[in-house]
Image 1 (cartoon, rainbow, N blue to C red):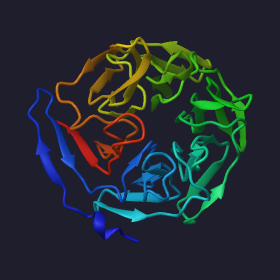
Image 2: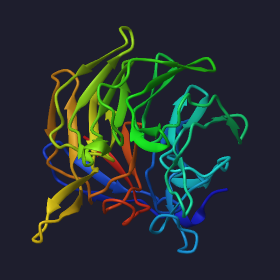
Image 3: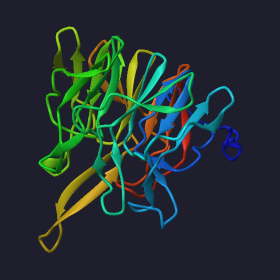
Image 4: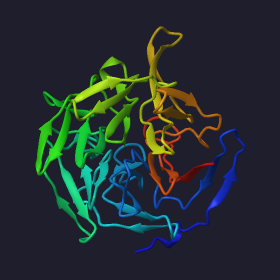
Length: 338
């Protein structure tokens, strides 16, 4: 079913810059979404299982609930369509495409009583049957993780899991071989809300935060070498960020936005949490191991957004303009580099 309400015309906004970054507003998502982990599958952009804005009586966290919906964007028609519903609602659900199968991994279920029920489930969608099937469960529940396909195998690392019944950061790293998850070299730091890309079968993981250290943001960039099952530390990001997103285009890694939680002491001597979101665009040169901050930022601050690259463009999907569970948006923008 094509979502006719979402077929608004593209509105081009050109911003003059040395590297000719061009932002174009595309057809909005069918609903405001954040904590989006999208994927390109069968030539289209897939979004499934996020925090979706809903009616107040259905919300479990601020104005949000975990979504069962799958939304599919056709870049040629510039329209959104309904895909097959997930077997269960999820937020922070990791989508990753491997040839003719789309995986939806881990994430959280949510109720009014507990909005952070981390899961081991794996769902699979192929391009023949328009239904999600049950895939091989993760060895441990994982959400807010990073996902990649290396040498034809699906990898999952980091995020949050359960320890003694409590949510905590993990550095676990699993690779799906056949229908069995096997351990691989753990991330050097247990953390969540990072972002990652795969380039030439090397996995780059950047940013994130450590909840146990007062939600400290990370500026780290790690590269996983599958041949030696080893992580390498690369140049730090210009800005420590969590809840950011990334993609690869023209041989460069681009990272976008994110959020930060910090504790400050107020005038009464009590600790309070301060938050902010970022509008930064950071570019990493794979050849020189150097970052630069682009002169043209995002059109607004945003965290929990999804990012994919397709047909030499980068698409930014949804997210929230404020840290946490408020300010959720349905915006979709396309970034072109000339």
